[in-house]
Length: 442
Image (cartoon, rainbow, N blue to C red; front, side):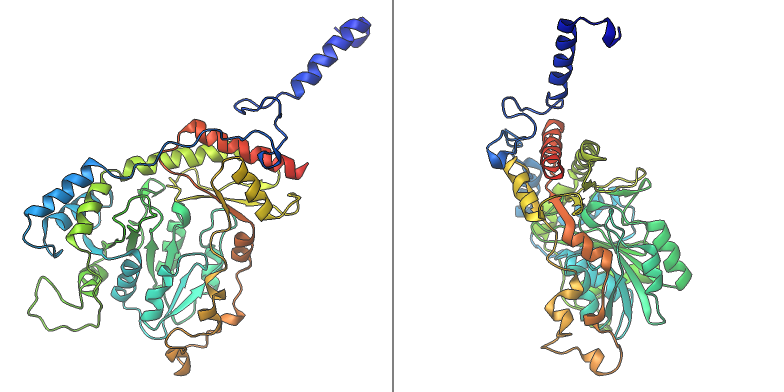
């Protein structure tokens, strides 16, 4: 029926119905009188009316392991029941021959760097957006962190810039799987092999993540994990370092145990190493947590990918980019706002999200690592940097810039995701992000 066939009364009825339908809230958005445009921060209804289920991180499996400790005569790690079980369960997910438990993820990275033979003046390429734990070991080995720029939306190392940063002094690359999102490991391994470099995987935030069907940590030469309290699985503090490469694997245990080779304790100590041992108490808890790891990672992956679908294509927002062949275990969900489309500052945007009931925060770390005062002042050791004073490096961090990394930190917003959330809760987060974004792009 064309407009000319309608009576005046019919025309008014049809157009009124169409107008009304166009103003209805999107499916899944629980808004009534306020409609979908009024922000909670301005008195509208929250997108998330109910809190997520309480996150329960431990229970009977952990209790059972801790009780079993009471029958032990020692809590030293070497060939002890809890550490043995932890390594066994770890290998069920990560088929790596040489495995050493450590006191922290930072310790694990330091052990990896030391086992790789990194020494004074050697250069190690890594990301400027990471925890200090990634670079502490480099500096304590008197080596030089070299910062490469990142891909804009997966937040991992940009291969081309890594290649640009390689010099005759480069000895290793540390790939950080930020927020549980796998780095481009095949390409990084190819670059490492072409230049005779060692590829170390920092999997601190990536428990259960997979790169093209393979567990992260099984592609590089050495890999490190963290069991710190905020990670997907935890024993409060702890770490694991592992390798299948015989050149480095046999060196992991001594470098975490004061240079002592526990397989031959009478052998003279030949290396300088610190004490990074994990106790049986930590190992017991971690062994129980290991049974939860795959389920936690799968749930986080499902929820994070759902959130991407909820906000994909939203003007002014760029979703967390994950390769469809990979599994991201979402330590957190990182989106970016596009300032040229969003008519407010990031802090205001995040406050509006918080008012909708969404656990969000502005930014990740305050600045790239190279902008921290100890880098800007080259003041790593009692206000000094001995290798620079001795002419072993000309690195000047005051002149370093990674433009994309800096832009990421200026525009990123972190959304908290955990395994206690369900799909309806994530849809509520998506609805809240859409609501806030549309308000500030109108």
